[in-house]
Length: 173
Image (cartoon, rainbow, N blue to C red; front, side):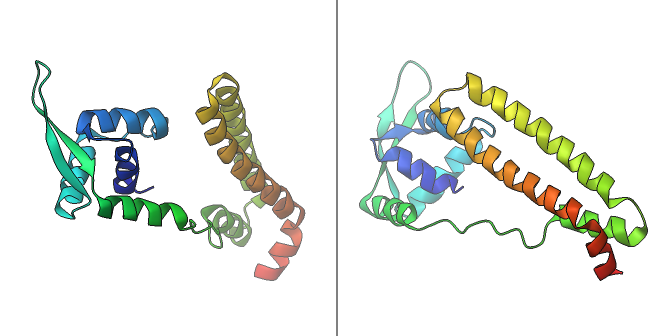
């Protein structure tokens, strides 16, 4: 995910300082991976240099001065373009799990064991996501649903591959 475009999108609701942007980012998008202060400020400096944000004053609340940033028209246009551009679907034509299965078969190791271990890991992850989803707010539920659907697709692939191991072994030998 583009940190710069996300920060610009957060600025569309009004000017903010870096600390507030970091907090808003973490609250909305950083459930599993929070953004670092240094990354927020270096990104704001880059956006300022590119003319996508502008300084909009300084706040002093008894602490250090905090520069406020506002999105420019060019920044609004970039966010609009980004939002209207579809994300490239993830197509896993070459993945590590497939490589492990083939290498297990080539080396005479039990490829079914590779699939079983992976299936167990996927099921553990799905149980954890389901727990998180059950106790979470709508944001957590949507994030967990996205991850769960991907894991379900992986499980289907694991089952299909397990059913085809003998044929795969013949074709790659």
